[in-house]
Length: 231
View 1: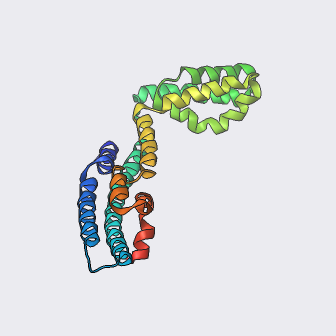
View 2: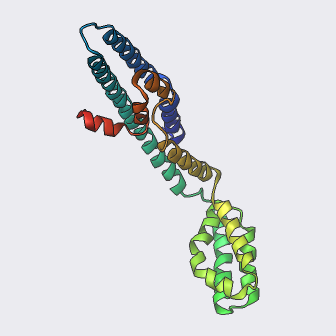
C-alpha cells in the first residue's frame, strides 16, 4: 500500500464519523441516566450530584477508550505512511543510458583533475558550467555526493561564492525528483496529523453537553483519565 493511501486511511479515521457515532451513543446514555438520577426521590441533592458525577466519569472513561483505540489505529497508518515515504526519498533516481553515464563521467573526471592539478579560475569555471548544465537527477546526485571533495577547490577560485551556492541549489532541485518532493510533502503531512486529535473534533460538543467542561481535555490527554480510573 502506498504512503498516499495510508495517509488517506489516517484522515478517514480522524475526520470520519465512526468515532463520533460511537461517542454519541455514550453521550445519549449518560444524559438519560443522569436525568433519571435527578428524578430519584430517594436521593438527597448531594447524593444526586455524586451519582451523576459517577455516571459522567464512567462515560468519560468510555470515550477516552474510544480515543485511545483511534490513536492506535491512526498511529499505525501514519507509521506505515512514514516508512513508505522515506523509502521513496531514499530510492535512487533512474539511471540514464550507459553511454550518457560514460560520457558524463569522463568529462567530470577530467574537470575534477584539472581543478585539483591546475587549481585556477578557469578550471573552476568549467566545473561550475558542468554543474549548471546537468539536468538529469541521477547525474546531479553523482556531483552532489562528491561536492564535499570539490567544494573547497571551487570556493578557493571563484570570487563570488554565491555562484557556487546557486549551482549547488540548482543541482539539488534537479536531484529532487517529483516523486521525492511528493514524499517529503507526505512526511510533513504525517507530522501534522500526528499532532492532531485522532478523532473527529466534533466530539468536544458532546463532551461539554453530556459530560461537562472538566472532561474537554480528554481529546488531547485521555491517558490521565484512564490511569486514574485504572482502565
